[in-house]
Amino acid sequence: GFERAFADYCDSEYAVAVNSGTSALHLALLAVGIEPGDEVITVSMTFTATVAAVLLAGAVPVMVDVDPVYWTMDVSQIEAAITDRTKAILPVHLHGLMADMSSIRHIAEKHGLAVIEDAAQAIGAEYELNSTACKVGSMGTFGCFSFFPSKNLGGIGDGGIITVQDPELASVLRLKRVHGGEKKYYHRVIGGNFRLDPIQAAVIRVKLPHLSSWHRKRRENAHYYNQLFEKAGLAPRILTPPELHNSNLNFPHIYNQYVIRAEKRDELQQYLRESDCASEVYYPIPFHLQECFSNLECDTSALKNSEEAAKTVLALPIYPELPREMQEYMVERIASFFQTH
Image (cartoon, rainbow, N blue to C red; front, side):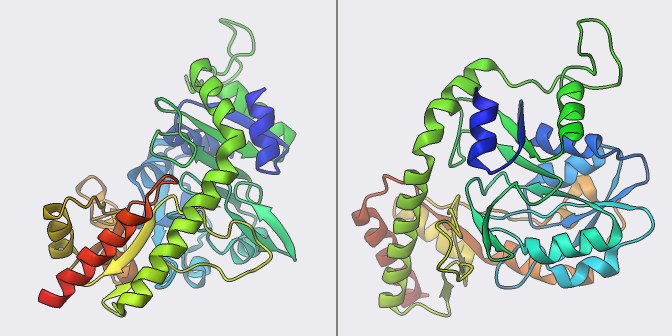
């Protein structure tokens, strides 16, 4: 049914549906045997669930910075962050663009670490690995996805799924998502209620065949934005989102968000609001600066790119049905702002 169809879409052996993207991350961490005191290397420039899931599993998040161009995990910092307590690497495929999985896999294999892909914003994105186009979620130990309604593939409420290649790990996921019991009231291990509601699976299953066409429309909208910004001559005050340049891939970026970096971001966003133009900031505060994580020991001097991104990122509407007139108006308003500020 739904799990088989999703696994096939992601070029994965198995898929195990759960009740949210947060649960997907949490359950994947439990399945690799995370214990109190274990460390998981991840990033600070992400949604709270990435870091919170590590803590919920009893582990310690060790945050490395993001790359200054792509805003995904800076792979040059990973090895220095590895200790004898490190159990996994948790890269985030941000805004629809994949992290450097070739380097991450190499480091993980060298040090015997699990790789848990946070693919909540990147369903369907591709990456070239050993001259082969690989789908997001197929290159790590696990791939974790969200079906929150705002995602490219959204349900009518919360939902998530985990892709996995190993049959034993797939069995562990299935066992732990139903309180650790294969038979009602008989519990082999400690688990939780991570089940996906059938109504969500039914809705998402109907939408799945349309996903690639929606991706193509998002990419067309992104390229039109790029043309408009280039024509307006707004660089370097506005920088458009980068792609991994590879003509062999259909979807090197699926634009879950179209995120520019902007000078005077907060003033610009207020100006756009007054012009009836919607925008969003993903994310205004990196997680090493969040109040709930203030007790974490963290070298903030090594996370400057995350802090810079938090001050400059601005997401513009990119949904498949977006009219070109709205894109033109948006870029005209941004150009107008910089003419007067």
